[in-house]
Length: 306
Image (cartoon, rainbow, N blue to C red; front, top):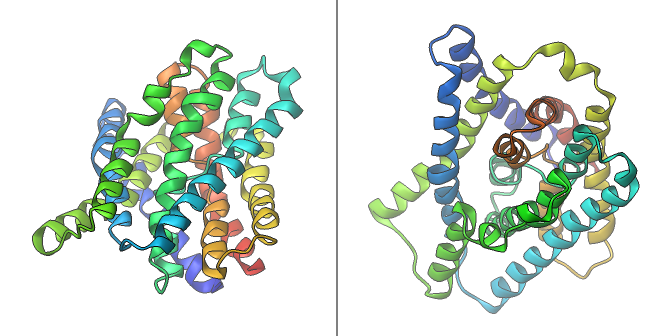
């Protein structure tokens, strides 16, 4: 894949974070407002982004097959890596930073960073954007099941209802209804869907910039556990993804698209979950922010392998 296109795409996404950083640093936006921005992102932008991505495909047996494959692969890859990390680090999970590490290794920013990357790198294969929605759904399911148990050590936080009935899950359901009903939103409706969906990445990065303005810089670079999580997510996870996909009889473009999603940094979902629990927010924020910054280097390099 093109090194220059990848680098410029990631760089532009990181530049979106600058206004958020400056707004908080210069006290034009109070830190308390970040939660409102995050709510707008999760409940408005993200669902529109998912439905818009699924509108890029038309019904066919091929698409039904590959949507199923994408869902299955995403659960196997992310759930499998999370399970392996749990087994390796289970004796250290009394520490919150190791719990965050276990979840961070497999749960990537497949929506807010993955989709723009796929749009830039694979414009000739728009179907991959719909397949990315299956990864987004899998992340939600895993975080409210295995992830919640690992992060809290308490099975009471596991919730099948929350895993399925959430903004991402509802958006995927709407997208599937439109897909199987062969309904394409065009004209003003299609334009509104596209505009709202494309707001997701800039809003996400603005929020990251706001959070960066509040995080002490030194701890971000001094905790070795954070570097472990980031190295595994940005380097090991993509290689595992490629190793799993390579022997399978799948379309080359599909493999390339899934590999791109494997290369993205740690997803905001990890931080959002930590904030909801009221524990581990600093570690989660550091992992998400630092992995996002470092991905400007790792993503272009990792994509040279395919």
